[in-house]
Length: 589
Image (cartoon, rainbow, N blue to C red; front, side, top):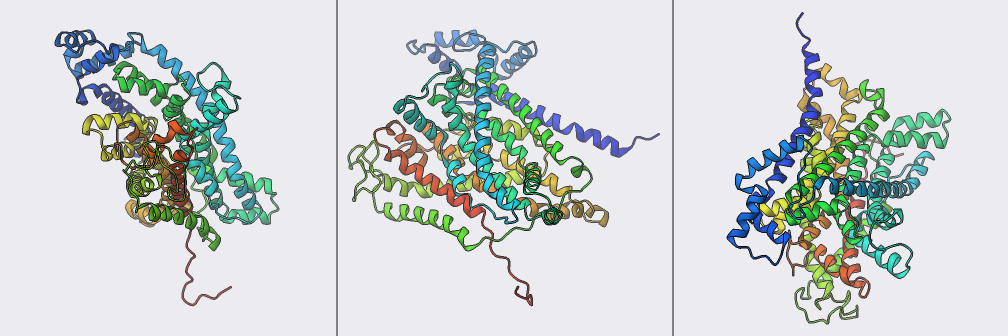
């Protein structure tokens, strides 16, 4: 009997996800393995300097390093030999310390996973507190989209800034918790708070938005008429809102593991992120490869768990096209425009009052406090902070907005192919922007454009995951499921019926992440991988004031306040809905 073509297509489709993961992991490992040869420096020179700064880089010394590391055979031979050894369980020895890299990576991974679990607990608590008011209003029959100002403020808090503040206030001033090291769970409290609070703000904001949308469904009125209690309605709203967000939860957890480099540096936590950053900086290829592979393994496991939880929550509804139609967006009232208008006014005032000043003249007195003629004080070089914030507003906001817009476009396009891009999404989200920045700088050199490309390479993944989740739900709705029977083609079905339900929430998600993009760009600049001093980039201004946060807090509060205002404006404006226009002839009432 001839084979059923549909069965073969299903079997081929089942192989797409594992092939995607294998290809993404293999490509990333090859790219990392070629990093020393992609850079413009001699790998032997970098390793020699890492081993001994006093040793002269003579031709003989460099030749000895190349022979010791096997670099004379070329990059592809070296990469193939490493892969063959890895299959046998030998992941190599550190080029710098000469010790096996696997033991250090396993120890660092254990520390990072512990820190991730505690930070995730903090994030869940923060998200629960943020979504509780929206959930109570929706269960009580008074659904209203949240303004999001508090959540946006938490999202906008730079983790390294929050870590430094907690270190100074809690550990130094109060003496309650230890400031450095990793000798017990009490050492993890402050790092977990620094990582979990911004992550909880993001999850709380997305969940509150999803609950407000779910509350507009007709099933809510049906349950209410049937006498369902508020607790039952609240449970139903959460179950309806969570499936589309579970991939985001998984990506946030991966981000907590791979993106905790700054927090681990502040608190001297010997985690995997700090280990990988140190290996990348020293071009310690074996340690860098193992660190990236460990991050990718965590990403794959968490991504698979998030998808399994999503399928479990949806149950048979996703398979039988029983999902309800998309909710009707609720228009924003006049009060909802107050917060974004206030944030926009604050940013306009900063630019208008600061532009007449000189952002580069160091003639104001080092760390001068705020005064009538110096409204925000001066930085450590004696430059006017207000003038620097005004000068950096256009570059910081425009570059972050451009990267966010391109990330949104990439996320939507690649999210329409969820199975083919699963591995790429997981690998990309597990890669810290710092590592992406190192790779890009090795190719094009340090610049603002290079930093933008590096952040773009890792910022589209959460949006693609969000798109994929929403596309799956949109295609499983009855009115979309029946379209092929009516002769509607795939392209028209996607453009007319799927994308209108997907694009608005993804765009809001992208705007929520805009401040994070700005911070990532600034962090790369501070590390010498992006805009260079004395650029008035907001992130550079913030990073430059970090060493003086205890004695001159205004050098940190001013740029942090500007970033928070930008975040509040982006998030609250993204949640606004213009009033729906009445059709001609429609009656009032």
